[in-house]
Length: 517
Image 1 (cartoon, rainbow, N blue to C red):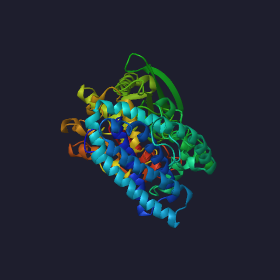
Image 2 (image 1 turned 180 degrees about the vertical axis):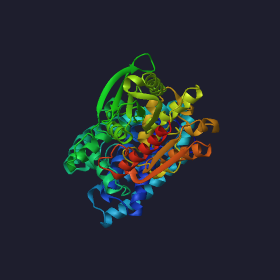
Image 3 (image 1 turned 90 degrees about the vertical axis):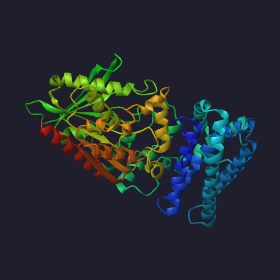
Image 4 (image 1 turned 120 degrees about the vertical axis):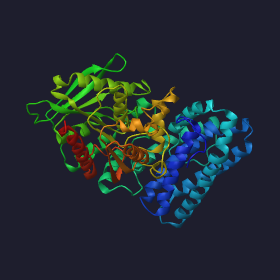
């Protein structure tokens, strides 16, 4: 599912298309006979009910006002069909004739509805309403998704104030029912059947907390929800595994940020430090520039500290929307410079410094290397980019086949970009974000690079393209791909074999570089 024209991540048509892509991929799992059919249908029901509610409150009332009366009536009719089918699916079970017939009809009706919206109605609406209105309506769309009933109410009024009342009346009862039945605790898992058992246990653990979708929340709400580290800790507790992994010492320092303020730098020192200065790894945390912090990625830093016998430092950079692009990048570059200038007081060797990170942390690792090279400064001796974002575009096949991935899906990726680039649309084409747009000379300036990607990850395709680009430009590049796991898997070494292997691969890459200096 993709629009044929350019949009910004927070535009209402962009957000609608993300929802379409997620649901269609879940339909594909059902058609292929894989995954948990009950959970997949429950997740689809939740998504479509919220999506339909938001469209009917925000979008459809505008259409008759701008001459789209026929389109309005057709869309309302199809939404009514969809709601009625969802009610039947909620009352029946997989394998029952009524369930399977209703599911088949739902897929057919929904795809027809999506085709009409993406190829006719949304382009027509944008042309008539104007591109500048799309972002404002996008905010309204997300607000109403937060307020939507959690179950379809086909007999509720279709739009406007009356539907809001119906939603407010229906939602509390729905939530009580969902919590009682356990459905709420299945909504955040990956029901595709494509994860291996260890990875499945982690996403199931995250879902067991009953989180709301990050992508409909405000950033301050989203930050209060459980993160990937909480899921791993729950699996560890369930298995009687103690943690966190011990290291020699952990210390938080206050250092400058990129705006003449302060940021925290967490410093991990290995147990067997020895006498001489140690190599240093700067590890940059992820979270789409909006979520998470150095605590979330503590396990990755501990694992790398022990596996490399190096000092690991992690900057707690400023996040959006409070500090939009390039604040995070500025803080990471400032932290790198501070560590290099003060390596001695940390017990480290400034000539043996490497950089890496996960998700947008991997993006900022490469961007930092680029800035250092452009400024004629010493670059890291090596870098590790774990499932990095390398373009703000919806790039490659993973945007379709992993659109529904957990914990990162396509809608959440857009939500992060919407906040990270708020008021800065030009950020999307900045070389610190658009890594795939680099020149051959910029690519060739990279230190030896390890790129790690994984199967159930919307960023998989762009990470793999980045590795190919670096290699073609002559930068020493290694790519490691892990099947059956998801975005944010790297820090789960205590309970996931692939994470342990990925950390070993990263450590081997770093220690090889350190040994040549």
